[in-house]
Length: 489
Image (cartoon, rainbow, N blue to C red; front, side, top):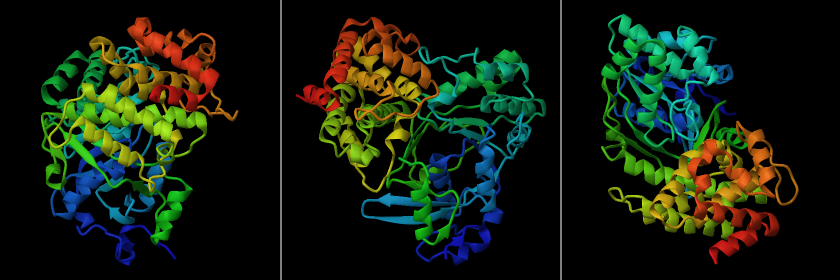
């Protein structure tokens, strides 16, 4: 019989499972984290938990939060087990489990986000962090600037005390703190975005300025927006993961599996203090942009490069994708010849060595990371991680043939059918638009590049458009494997 996960049962868990050694009743709130998915619990919450295991940072407990109705189901599951999470590390040498206890509460989900605003207005909260995915920042996909025309943003401007978005709630909480003469909190993005702190700064201040110019000025002068780079492969939790935690002897409704690798690189730019994350392996540096460029371009961009051909061929997991010789070859050739030349080395890691590291991580057979999860929201992930690399190649007149092929593969995938005739189910917030463009592009490849909100001036570059046209026609006429063999030859 598995032991139900909760504070009262921690001492009854199997001896092999690590658990909190600190008194969780002594932990007090310091951080609100919005977007409490698997990644946060396997990454940022784990770093804080490790500090607490050393007797540090007990005044930095995490309060989870969400802004959508579907977050309520997660909140209830977490509350039923005292906000504890079982983390299962999927090391090729063997799995292990530990229980993380740095999260101590979860704000009730309600329309208007009143409870969340009140929690963030509490003087004890000194950091508000977010993991809301690349597509959650209300940016124009072509310009990457704040989009004030989005209906959610328009709603928040019209209803500043009952906002719909996380950013509107943060602005409302900062307004309360200003009006009560309470210091501002640090706004910390933990998403895979280049310059994520700068983007957070732009969104928060721009939204505040639409409501109250004086408040925007106060936020500019008093808050902080550190850049960071986060890295850990964390699969979605499904029946396999739920069965695995039971095998460990733990009854956990929301376990998390993760690879045996973590990295967190943080700019030391906080307005109200921070935990000493560097004491448990985080890197505090002014070189965040170099680290994030390496990770976003090779890992996140590499994920998009391999996910599209895998989906077209009906391959289900990333490690199986890397067992396919042509897809593995595609990743390595693009990464080494078209990505690495635009990336700076960081202390202890060259771009070429990083390609080898990512190859090893993608190939981990213990990580059942699905192609579908990796391919999700390509309209945000390609525009964030791949298209900037094509723009660099155009500007510097460097090779881009493989990057153009990655776009042709994405277009072929978005047509919605695999080579075996089976359907690729909608997997993007704008799937209908993508599918329509991909269908038209089967006969006229320029129809895909006509999505100017993604490609902008790239659609006018003759070198890129010629390569894209060649590859997309070849994919439709000869198939994925033959096309990849041609590229690799």
